[in-house]
Length: 409
Image (cartoon, rainbow, N blue to C red; front, side, top):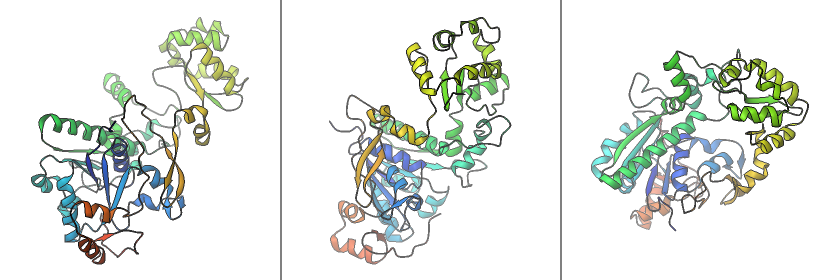
C-alpha cells in the first residue's frame, strides 16, 4: 500500500530544527524530499557528537531526504533551484525574512512558473509586523512568548523548556499548514503561500493560560511540576526519586486516597475534599502526600496506582525512558544503517496506524550525496553535471573539498 504523500515533491531549503522537523515528517509520510544545502551544509551538521565525520543529531532529524549542495547565489545555481521549484508540490524555507526575495526564490517569483506550488516560510517572528526583520532562535521565542516565566519553580530564574519547544512547535504548525494547503489544492486546484514563526507557534500552545488571562486576568507563573487547575497533579518525592500523580478529579482522588494511600480521612479533610479547594491548598497537600510517598520507592506507588486505575508514573532520566520495555515494545528506538556513520539508532514513528501512513525508508544523506542524481532526474546530461561541479555551482562532499562560496544569511 502506498504511503499517503508518495509522489509529492518537496523542495526543502530549511536549516537546523523547525523546518527540517517538518520536512522529516513529510518524508515519513512518503514525500520525495530534496534538501537544498549550501556548501557548508545545514548548520546542524556541525553538532556533536560526530561519528565518522557525520553529526549523529543531524542524522536523526534528516532521514527520508536526499541532499543536493548548491550555490544559490550563482546564476546557474539559482536557475537550477528554480527548475526544481517549477516541478515541486511544496517548497519550504526558513531564512531571515527578505533573503529569498533577494535570491529571486520567493513565492511571488516562483508562482508564475508553478501556480500549484505550496510555499511555506518559517521565521523567528513572521514576515510582517514590527519584529518581522529580526532573526530569532528557539531561546528568544521561549523568552518572548512568556513560556520561560511560567517554567521552573516559583521564585527561581526564568527557565527554558528542556527541549527546543518553539522550534518543534513551528515545525508542527508549518506541517499542518502544508497538509491543509495540499488538501485545498486537491479540492480547488491552486497552491498558496503560508508562513508561521517560532514566537506565534509556541504562543498558540498556551491554551489554558490564554483563557485564564482573558477570562480572569490571571498571569501564569512558574509552578514547578504542578498543574494550575488540578491537584494532586505533579511530581512528588518518593523514597528513591520522584513519582508523578494525576488524580485531580473527585473519582480519581477518591481512588488515590483510599486504594493507593489508605487514607480515607483525606476525603473528609476540608483542605482536600473539593477539586478547586485542593488546588488552593496544593502546598499542604504536597506535605501530606510526601510524608507517605517517601516511605516507599517509586515503583511501589506506580504499581499501586496502576491497580487502582489512577494515572501515575516514574520521573525518568532520558537514558531510562529509552531503555523502558514499553518504549521498546512501541518501536520508538529503531536501528538503521547510515552510509557513513554505519549502524545507528533513530527515533521511531510516534503514529501507529492500520494502513500505510508513515515509514522510515532511508537514512539521512551526507552533504550533497544526491546532487548528481537529482540533476540527472531534471534533465541535465552527464557533461552538464560535470561542468556544474567543475564551475563550483554544485557540490558533493564525497567527491572533493568544497569551493568557497558566499554564505547565505
